Image (cartoon, rainbow, N blue to C red; front, side):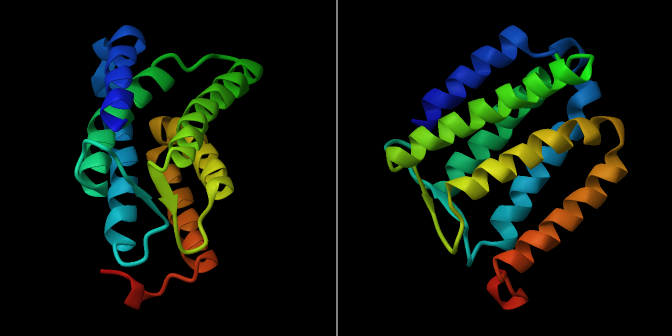
Length: 168
């Protein structure tokens, strides 16, 4: 399943992504990837969600594939075509949250993602909205995005009662 999803992201990325200006988005792609690495590293012992697949062997393989392909294509399309005007930006934001959440919904129904330790689909909706809210902020004001991210990470660690001993 995840190979197919990433295949679609490769096609979409090449078709609609702003590849000519990839250097403009490079730090935001890395920001997106670092966020996922932090989740996978810090919550190794107390995961909130796990990916499963029929072909790919484990969560780590699926996650690394997503980091390299999905996140890169997403940033190149999302920021590369980021519209002007608040209404257009809101609709663009809602479209991308909808794309990610639709994929997660179907993956959860098919058993390709499972939730753990209090996390659920609705937390994913909120978290996905935060991601797509913060990506353009990082693109324009990276330090502000890092500050917001640190606050959000701290809040989530507190809400889900993740202790230092729960970390790897």
